[in-house]
Length: 68
Image (cartoon, rainbow, N blue to C red):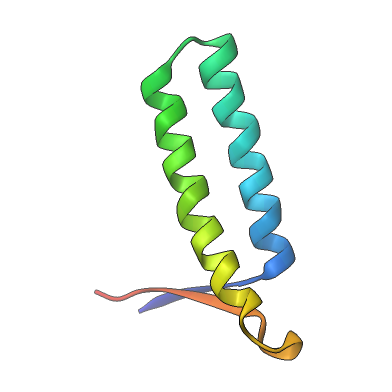
């Protein structure tokens, strides 16, 4: 089993990086399918971030697990 842990700040950094890629795909590359892909990933990380906001400050750590 593999796991990754992210703080809420790291998740916001990921969302920001995905937003840049979404803008590049849509506006520069005119690739709406790729832009949609990045937007979907942004939405998934935003959901995780939103869930973290419900927790107390010291518990704001998301652990993503890949179970085989």
